[in-house]
Length: 394
Ligand SMILES: *Cc1c(COP(=O)(O)O)cnc(C)c1O
Image 1 (cartoon, rainbow, N blue to C red):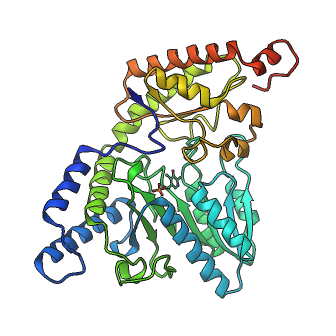
Image 2 (image 1 turned 180 degrees about the vertical axis):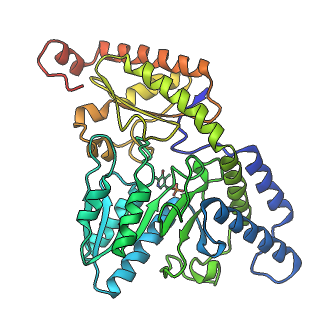
């Protein structure tokens, strides 16, 4: 089995699993309790906070632990909206290809009277900083642009966008769920005010994540209750999960340069191999992309059939994102970069892992070639394309 769906979730690392078990067994107290088993849990919690903060260049007090990336996105955006509203600022800038945790939160705000500008991501899957600058108005309270896209892997010019927001005095949030642990992220150097991350995208456990909030920015609670997380996120903390997240992040960070070098080389071999398939195209910029992301469109086929046949060959991949596969709508990300419906339907995302081998890449290329050819053999769309009834786009 070759698992190439690491953008959907990753397998927990051995170090993270061991950390989690050791805390479940020994440090199981409530971190808010004053007796020793509680205080040990508290220590583990605060150690994790320090470790996570250090890796992204933040202070421990600026880290709020959450149930994952979605919660962090919701809290960051709703908090910025609340702060803006108090000053009569009800305009938010984002991009058309954000994760649904961002887009649906913005949609909710739109219904409450906020005005949302979704910037074009162009055919290369990149937001232009100058377009962010032009879009900022007197009443803009937030710019939220993802660090790296979860479907096509493109890495945005975050530092430049952050600098523009700083200069204009507008809060800047980034959904860095796909970037953290994979590419260097530093909230100070990158001019980030708020950042969302999720453990299960870097070999930590599911259901755990964090929100970085720059000191001085007031958060709004999504969950009311006890005074955990400085009163900003009620509920007894998932200490084993949080400690395991910190462990996974430390490991990912230590190995980042080596992992990225290896994965980039394999990614580029995959891209070169799949480009040989006729009427195919890589989605998103070839260079400004995550080390592990390959995303292609193949004309004349359905992504779903491609996935099932690849699964038969032991290759686990994705078409669109996990959230949208299962629905008939093509990916909003592929539509945002200008792919038409027919073409967007024939997409394949391979998000490779750190341990991918040369042989596996060769096998994937061979298998995708076979499966695309096979599916085109009885595709009515392909027949129309070949007989000239329909025009090729790719
Ligand atoms: C996975 C993902 C999320 C959601 O994170 P969860 O921890 O699963 O809630 C948000 N944004 C991006 C870019 C993601 O890839």
